[in-house]
Image (tube, rainbow, N blue to C red; front, side, top):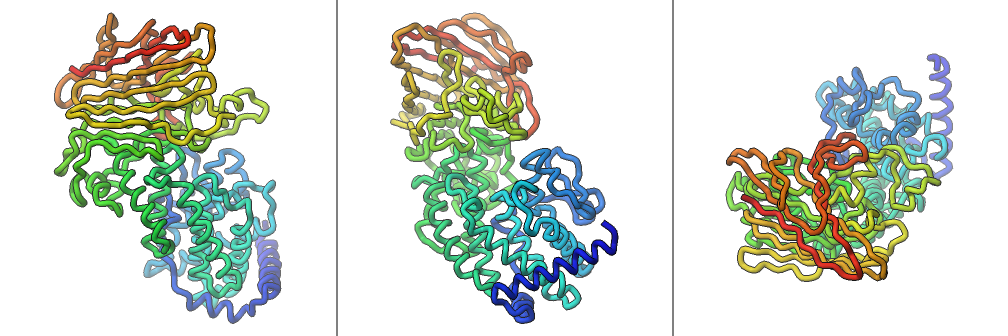
Length: 589
């Protein structure tokens, strides 16, 4: 576009924006005066779901960097749609305007006028391209999360621009963009109450209602947002505080946003605030001894110790700060019968630096919806003696969608990457597989929580759950003696008369080396306290241990999106004729 074309486009956009504001019953000069005097919102809050570490100079000179992707030339960008077409997450984070955060911080600095003008120019260019554009032109522009997270950044830009008389025309354009962003947030397609995205739509509306009271739709927007927030709090977090999407990292992320909304007084409902308090307590149990969030469901190995230093729960704060703040917990067992998790941390750390030495066990027995759900019923993760032993496969990332006609859709897969499909599979988790098939997800009615009795008996912890599958029932007892052993007691009742085969899959950390294979499989890892040996015995026919097998994929985990690292995959196959009861034992020595 030439300079003359750019000027013409801006004049046309200004005229259209002015006309639309007047159509809405707004007198433009009065609106600008109200925007100029409105309080400025903070530049961080519920909408900063990840920290942008680039400087403002780097964003504009080198391009905005997201994950492993090439830098995006924000300063000269005209084709926004290409990034979402290449990768949905890339497009979502781009259209959420996350790149604006360091630019806005620079605009608030003492010499920020130049930065503000750069920010305003990018925002106006985006509005020019996307005003009136439909979903087909760039679906990620109007993706529910994109518009929810973009709205508070657009508000921050418009209110700052309004304070500069020479940016009057740009402010008119941005003000009208705010008005139609509120329109978009009202749409049914913008609010999905079935997953965590609905929270961001709802809180975006409440946020907008607070700072845009000069717009005639602000009161209705805030009221609808408050109603939606109440619905989301009750549907996203169980009464015991567990996030109902099978992913501790999404629990962490959504809880953080809820906590920030509470701190910003965007949530006043006491019942909601109490539920968030319980969710903060649950988060502490999801912190592993290595300082990362438990990798069940769609969870990368997010480091939180030393990164996130606050929580509204004092026990969780104690863990997040590795004992520097908060209060140590005394209970070593926590079971959440509605959420479907049970945890052991023994001994509980009571002083700085002790977290890493705790024995830790996580047991999942939940299926609330398809959201982030892997084929992993009755999965366990285990740390002991300062080392991870049983691992989870992680999430690998999302990427390209499967063709809608792919038969893999019937198995519950949405994404095309074989690595993504592997980390979702049953064999990538520490649980039971029957007849070589993944546990069913697609077309299966969610059962909620499957936890039964979870008790502590002296130094031993005994956790139980029962899951009904389409043609068999699986009961599992997890008997854990910290520092000594883990026993998995599986009882299966088949509703079919023919002979079948079960496999107990185990995935051990890749830092172990295979020492011997006999009656037991012995693996050893070097630790700062000397060698750690794990002896594994199981039922029936032993499957050959492998680490990082390529064809077919077996023995892998993903700590961060887009990458795999080897783990040990062990399997024990046993015959199943109506009923079977088997024991798998892991001893430390």
